[in-house]
Each structure stands twice: as C-alpha cells, then as structure tokens.
Image 1 (cartoon, rainbow, N blue to C red):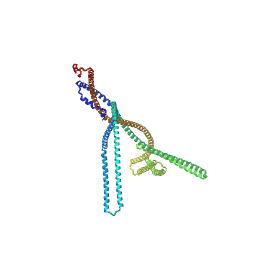
Image 2 (cartoon, rainbow, N blue to C red):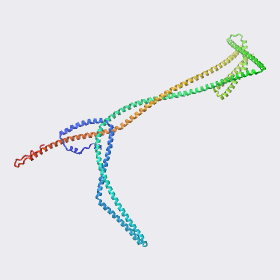
Image 3 (cartoon, rainbow, N blue to C red):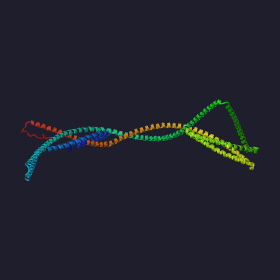
Image 4 (cartoon, one colour):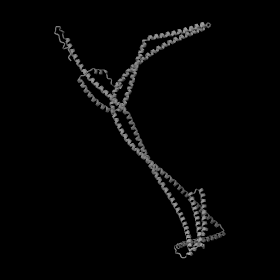
Length: 640
C-alpha cells in the first residue's frame, strides 16, 4: 500500500515506451546511460547503507507512524468502498421503489381486498351462526341477536382502523428510509473528497519520510558505535566484578576467621571473668572474715579493757581481806611461774642433752666412743623415760588438741552457715585436722614400736653386745626418723601454705593480666570488626553500583538486540524500495529521452507544416491562369 501511495506512475507512459522503437544510436546511448546509472546506483547504495546504519532509530518511529497512517487510510478506503456499494444498492432499491410505487399501491389494494374478504367471511360466518342459532334455538330473545350484530360491527370498525394505521406507518417508513439513504449518499461523497485529500497528504508525507529516512542512517552508525562501546564497557565491568567478588570472598573469609577468634576470645574472657569473679568473691569473703575477726578482736579487746577496768574497780572496792587473798593468789601464781620456768630450763637442758646424745650416737657409729655400755644404758633409760612421757602426756595433749580443733571446726561450720563464711577455708582446716589425727596415730604406733624395742633391749635374754648396739641404733634411728618426720611435715605444711599463698596471689595477678589482655584484644578486635564492616559495606555498595550498571547495560543491549532485527528488516525493505526507485528512475529517464526526441520530431513536423501553409497561402494570393502552363506539384511535396 505504501508503494502504491509513494509512486503513482501512469500506464500510458509505459505503453508509449513499448510502442516506440528506438534507433541503434539511441540504444548505445541507453546502454551508456544504464552503465552510468548503475555506477550511480552503486555509489548511492553505499551512501544509503552508511546513512541507514547511522539513522536506524528514527526509522522505527517513522515507520510505525507510516504504518499507522497506512492502516488508517486502508480502513477509510475500505469504508468508502463499502459505503459506495451500499449507496449504489440503496439508490438502486430507491429507484426500484420509486418506479414500482404503483405496484405497491396495487399490493395495498390487494391487502385491502383481502381484508374485506376476511371481514366478509367473518360476517358471513357470524350470520350463518346466527341463522343456525335462529333455526336451532327459536326461543331466544331478539336482544341477543342485536348484541351479536353490534359486536360484528365493532370488529369490522376495529379492523378498518388497523388497516389505516398500517398504511400510514408504511408510508412514513418509506419516506424516512429514502431521507436516510440520501443523507448517507451525501456523507459518502464528502468522505470520498476527504479521502482524496488524505491521499494527497499521504503522498506529501511520503516525500518527507524519504527525506527523514536519508537522515536516519547516520544515527544507526552512531548506535552501532555506542553498542560496541557498551560491549567493551560490559566486558571491563564483568572483569572488575569478578575481581570485586574475589575481594569480597576474601574479606568474608577474613571476617569469619576474625569472628571465630572473637568468639574464642569472648569465651576465654568469660572464663577469665568467671575465675576472676570466683577469686574476687573468695577475696571478698576473706576480707569479710578478716574484718569480722578484727571486729571480734576489737570487741574482745574492748571487753578485756572493760573487764580490766571492772576488775580495777572491784579491786578498789574490795576489802583488805580480799586484797590479802589476792596477794596470796599472786604469790601462788609466782611460784607456779617459777616452777614453769624451771621446767622450761629442764626442757632446754634435755634438748641440749639430746643434742649431745645425737653427737655421741654419731661418734658411736663411727666407733670413736669408749664408754659404750654406760652410755647405752643411760640412753636406754632416757629413751624409756621419754617414751613413757610422750605416751602419757604428749599423746593426750595431741588428742585433746585434735578434739578441740574438731569442735572448733564444727562451731565454725555452724557459724559459717549463718554468717556466710568461706567453705574452702573450712574444708582446708578440716583436712588439716584429719592430717593431725593421722600423724597422731602414726606417732602412737612409732612410740609403741620404740617401747617394744626398749623393753626387748632391757631384757636379760640379750645374747650379745651386738644385739644391744643394733637395738640402740634402731631406737635412735627411730627417734631421729620421728623427729625428722615431724620437722619435714611442718616444713611441708609451711611450704604448702606458702606455695598456696603464692599460687593464689600469682593466679590473681595472672587472671587480672589475662582479663586486661582479653579486654585489650576485645577492643582491638571490635575496632577491626568495625573497620571490616565498613569495608564490607563499601564493597557491597560498589558491587551494587556495578550490578546496577551491568543491568542497565544488559537492558540497553537487549533493547538494541530487539531493535536490530527490525532495523535490518527495514533496511532490507529500504534497499528494495531503493532498487525499485532506481529502476523507476531509469525507466523515467529513458522515457524522458524518448519524449524529448518525439518533441524534436514534432517541432520539425510543425515547421514543415508551417512552410507548406505559407506556400499554400502564397499560391492562393496569386491569380489563377487557365491558359498558363501546368505547374508541377513537386513544390508542394513534402521532403523528409
């Protein structure tokens, strides 16, 4: 349809070109012109291909507009054709109706006749019924007959009215339809004029579209260059995206490692906190116990001071008899003090003697001493006395002290449950008491063994001096071992207590240092975590921007890929149109040349005819001589 609208070449020119027979020189000219036109076409094709490649984007829009215009024009032409056909049919029908108006009247008369016949039949039937009724029933009244006749007359009048109304409606309908068809005919004529004007406008638009098409090739090339540039940018962005993704993965791995380290550090910190809290609680409880002991000691001192003051007051208030009693008691106490001092001195002397005995024992072992028998006898006596003293007094004192310690621990347990004392301290003291009990039992066993050895040594059944010496040595070795065990146990207890104290102090210091280090590490890790989170956020933002750029590029590429096939199709169509236009131009140029030649031939013919006319005019002006010699008609002959 566009092709028909673009170029309307008359058929007479083609027929005229077919009728004309050109000469050989004209054929050569035609071939040369064909070659020139072919070269021109090739150059035009190249230029048009470049322009079409540059300006492909506008072609889509203009092509769509042209298609819309074509569709509108096609629809209007079809409507015009259908309207013309319907007009012709309606006019034909109107003419037939106008021409056959008389038969229509005859038909109406036939209808009227048929209506009268029906009325007559009805009346006849009614009359027959009446007659039959009169014959059958003679006894009925005349009033009923009159009523029946009135009804028949009413029915006939009603039928006549309906017939008149039908005739009027038919005439009105015919007039209305004739008016409508005349109005439609006028509308179709105006529509035809409008469509012709629209065809002219479309031809003008076709010329403008051709001009615009020549401007769209440049934009097509620009878009192709843009597509190439966008493809390169997409490749660069994909490479950059891969690098960014790798960096993001590395950052996520580092972040996961740091999170694991942070969790481990937090767990260590929690452990340190728990240990520190436990130790802090123990220290607080110890401080509380110390403060309580200090308070109790202060209270006891206050009570002692108060008692002393009370005693002083009582002493002042005592009578002289009571003072004398107190003096006596004081004297007794001084005697007891002197006796105790003597015992202490005796004990010191015994210690010195024990030292000397130990020295003698060493000398005896070396075989230096000479007074062996007397020394051994004396030593046996002293050992027996010491063993008896230890068995009678020392073990009783130890048992009493252990019993008192157990009672004190029970009291401490009872008070600790009330006052909230440290359970660890109570457990340690309980363990110490149990250790004292075990050592007391071992001491009793060792004393029994020593006593048995001494009794065996003192019996007269001893056979030889060597046995006595051996028993002596055993006893002394036992004594020394006992003393060493006591000293060792005390030293071990002291060392253990010192070690526990040092370990507790060191543990407390270590815990504080570890807690401080953990807090420092935590602060460093939190700072690193914040930095990493900021870096991750920045990387995510850069990735998001890159993804958005990629999506935009993909959308543009998809749009360009969607447009490219349409543009290629339109380019092919334009190439076909260009080919057709070039062929038409060739035909028009050939027809132009032929027409020019015809015009030249006609000009020559006109000149020849004018010359003949002038000759004839001159001949007519001359006088006619009948006697003159005949003039040859060669002058009047046409020379070609």
